Image 1 (tube, rainbow, N blue to C red):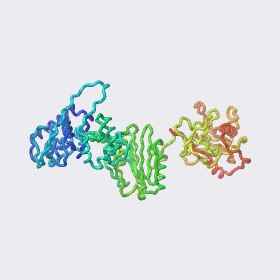
Image 2 (image 1 turned 45 degrees about the vertical axis):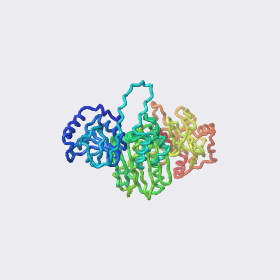
Image 3 (image 1 turned 120 degrees about the horizontal axis):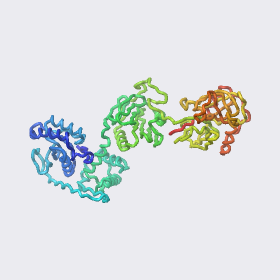
Image 4 (image 1 turned 90 degrees about the vertical axis):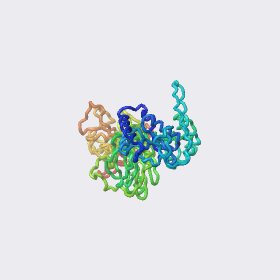
Length: 604
């Protein structure tokens, strides 16, 4: 057993006094009177591969606990145990010590059958367990505790002397299993010292990482970790997960097994393709288990869907192969990691969402989840939903879709996808999208006119381009506004019908015209079309001045001639006006107008 001992600096054991020690002394006082009696047991707290390391740990425990003993084990290691006690006292004492974190979490009650020669207390053979054994090894006397010297703060940190020589450390290291060596590499990676493969091979990269870790922690930089150093690294690595309640969870319905932090999250619902675990003690913590039947098309579809969820921030690495994908994302609130794989017609994986700023625990937890993840028979079927009737607009499987801060309308004005909209749509945005899928940048803003132009960041082929009609329409003509009045709640543009009420603004402006039409805020920036389908203007946003409230049925648009002149001044190659504009049927207009209309979204 290579037990994970608590580091001396984790809590002040040597100065611990009060009720806990009172209970320990009360229990041990009774136990001491029956030490050599049959049926006594021991509380084994640690095992070390070297005698020197075991003596150091026995000395450490003796500073705060009674009945500390050390024995050579029949495995060749050296064990540290408390006792002997009666079974009843040992169980009570173990519970108390574990509760107060005075002994490692993997301590256990032993019958002593594996104990051989006693090495602690040094020079005290009382109650020694006698067992057949080879010629005793010469004991290595423990080095005396170094006297602490008060040094000025400007002095460098003193180098800690090795508890094993490099040759001794290498010999003990050679006894480690491949899994133990991989864990050392993983712990070094977690500590920020190692960037190589987790392969259990201690090559140059691993040796350099060990040397770096030794230098950081005040040890001689030999590149070969001693038993005590390795234990210190692993204790720190494991301590990060304390309090999360790590458990191996077998989710039979989804056909998945992995280790989960069950004190941090709790099962919430089956919502195919997810098994949802929501926060229990850690705010914003959330875990999804992904399980569904599928093929490559469904894997790719899931890849796209995951990126629309609010729990998957946009900033982060995205990778997809023919059979798997990985999505990372982070913002000021959360970090998110998703991994999914297609295997034998089943798509399985998980998403870990963790609060921002807790990177050590998140990284460690993620490593545990990835290492323990297993495909099991079975898959989460759509019929497995906890509540099939629980459907909410703007959600997928009970998860909120990522929403823009604001959405308005726009329309294409050239073959490269340049889009006209209202300045309101792009104010203070970290990101601007066209139809949610195309990122765009600002080409120009004209606050005086109340328009803005956007340029797609990547090539875009518009399905239709606005034909600007610069002739002045007649009062009373039928007019149609195409836009997204509900800010994208509906997946397609909505047409709103009305008529031209005046060819001037309320103050006589000649570049603005008034509509007899009621429109929602989301339609602002959309095209205003006549019966021919030509664009006669851009719908302006309602006045930003809260002191001005227009009556119902009143809205304004900027005329096409002003739009054409402004676009031309920016050097844009707009479509020339058609030779003639023929009236279209309402059905034709309904099909044509949405093709040039764009949903413009502003994202935080």
